[in-house]
Image 1: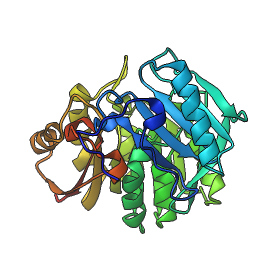
Image 2: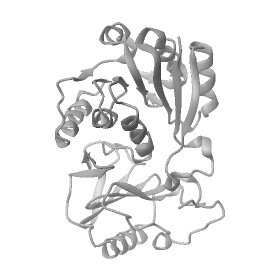
Image 3: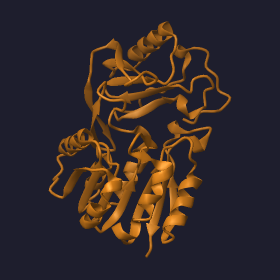
Image 4: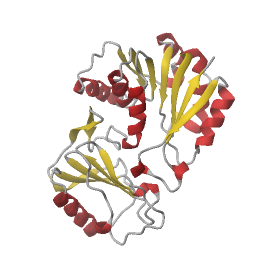
Length: 307
């Protein structure tokens, strides 16, 4: 379903959300795509058996409760409707209808992932990256994979499922890496060739090089983290290291999820810092994530490194 720019809603209960097409994790409503003027601050996700409404601005409390009850009654598999107030500090979560769930396990493309509700601002799985995980699974056969900013290691799960020889996961958050281990266990993976290192990537280039060389690079950095990452400033530091890290002919999946930066920023950075990287294609998110202001959304660019 693609959202049209001239579509308008009059109340929360009239949002044209979709019912889940399956038990798999999925986004049902993506107001963040700017297709519904006045509702850019709302997203609705199906994280079976939980429906999660995410608010980036305040809404009418009565309408919110009515929406929750409507969703709960219309989706038979739903056991809980929760809301996350992302505009508040720490992004607290509350139950609107049904049972309390602080965690659940969801499926996507036959793989399982741990979801946490209320422990952090993010649940543990970015749904707009589904096609990216699918691409990794399809291109990991016999590859040594470097997964930078690995978070909860969803890409690592996809890579091992796709037949990767090894994966090196790096993230500053040891808690996220612990969830990554759990994600591999959920999928009954042999993790003898999967490494999890809680490192500051920009202070660990020597260690990264020693664990290589690699055949597939996944780089999905945050836009900004105070004191550690400013991707506008720092992406080039990673790109210029590609000749040290990667085997000739290796594949690169370079991601950018900064509303203030367009894909041209990443293309220009790659061209300036590593001319041996050749653009292959762009992976577009699923239709539900269609964005009227396309450059505001997630960008996933595929390159091949030819030394």
